Image (tube, helix red, strand yellow):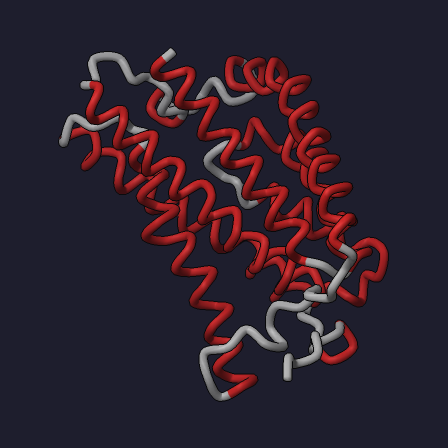
Length: 246
């Protein structure tokens, strides 16, 4: 028999500081890894984009999964996400075909409209950052290395989307239940703030992710967020491939 989904009433809310730390810590760890990895990647003659990609695969994803399974072990006595990741209620299949495309279109429009603003922030507000922080120059890189880079980007990007939804929307957001209707907004803002590697994208992340957080919370269905986030990151991989090889 399939176990019944766990509701927010069955979980213990986090304290304010616990929520803040658990939201921001993944970004802090990724930033530290990135700064340490850049000289190594540079000495190997690889594109600097490998530094954050390796950080996602070696630090971000293991940390977030580690927290989830640690909590699962405490709660269930085994490596299980039951009672840890909530919002797993069933919804009609047609809801997926409605909400997932709408969320993807909304985030894509936000990205298109706010991209010039992000470029403006890089040149002004964040002009003090070193050039390697944007890791966008692939000149002089062999085609085989670029193929590997785009492949790793796709794997890391889609995997991160799945794990981030489990961690941020399935685990952390329900534990902001004291905030009631404000929980998706606070969760989204903190999720945006932990993107320390791309601070110029804060507005885009908030506007692009906020409807998704509300839909997941309202429908009590984490899979909507996983599908939307995963497909968006897959689209990002395709766009990177076009920009690199086009």
